[in-house]
Length: 570
Image 1: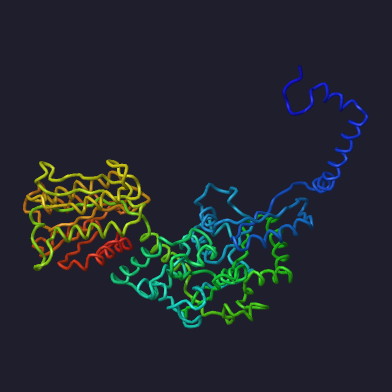
Image 2: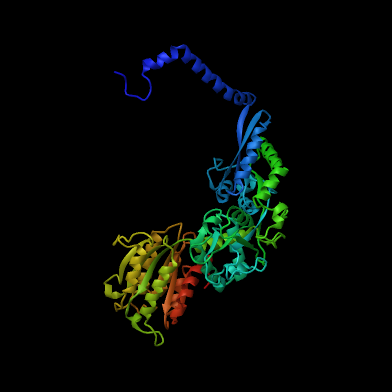
């Protein structure tokens, strides 16, 4: 019985190989294989070694550089007996920076021989480290340029003319009508760094400026992209109002060339912008790979590839909009005003602002429900009512990836003086006690139903207990904090004194693993100076108010303190 297979039985297979026709067929197959293999083999025979020139670049540059790599390979280049093949692939610039700066595991598949990021800013950031300074050349050559611009569809209401735009247009209060603002995460793209730098230049420095910067970051981070922005995913908008987007000019040109839907206009901020210069960077000091990199660069300087770059929407290395670019209606061909000082420390400052303000929070919220919370604020709502509103507002400000827990403070809850309603968990995840709701939904319902429990808050004891709780479960990837909403009166109910609490917090505070205290106290504060010392012991802050309308700004101000931790001055 023959075996149940899709091919002939073994005896049949042997019969085919023994037959004259079978031998002829096999021989023909071998000849075909040899016809393919011989030219390749001949090249390898002349190679003492075969190596690959790895080229890492941006998404927009990858197709062109691969074309050049293929032509380079067709020339069968050899260097001192070493055959070199070039291959280009898209690689996020922040990954290359991390690898070359020593954040990776040494030379790996991430380490290129040639790097063409969008901007020399990445080269600067890489060279900040000693490893990065050794790895890459100091003065890389530019392949093309493209200014960072704002963009929106032609005729969008509330958007200025292309030559009258301002970076102010991206600030929350300046977008009229209210519209989303889309940009790349500053850690992933220099266009995002440019936006952060420009906003800081407009806002300046100081507490009010930091609060406004916090408002900006919180507003845009939900629409932030983690790689090059594909404008076909942004326009036309389904939101009823078109977003304003920060992108390279080249992205606007490519979008308009690929689609007739919702044609875009490039808007050029009058304050200045950054010219992306697409540097051609040799990595390492291997003479063979350096020579191959130089030959590939010379190929890219040829007229064919320079014309192709212009067709893709890139300007020449000197910023000139050459060829057909000069006659387009969707851009301004004249060179843009550029920032001269967006280098080094300024770049790092822009990234630090973003990272601290967009970093997720891990917070334990303490809500005072003692007898002191029943009194009203200047004849208005009670302290507790304002606390409930503050809790709801605070919940709305934190993203789903934030962790949050809630304790209610009152001696009416027994010897601990608190009800540990919810431990710290992610707001967007399921509630641990009620999986049918998210932690955010459950906390919102709890906050709505809070009532005055009476008694004293045992404020100082509970502050220390909460601080220890957050400290013990510290998360390196989040901002760790204790938020206290209170009438601000301990009333002698704690076992420890205010002075002992301050001393304990000062001893526990670790600048390398900071846990900060943010205290929002409602109404007149006979113990204000003591509370201020408690907050200051952790590089935190105290906010005192009797105006419910100030709560939103207070929350933003408290978050903005992240910019100075662990060196905040009250």
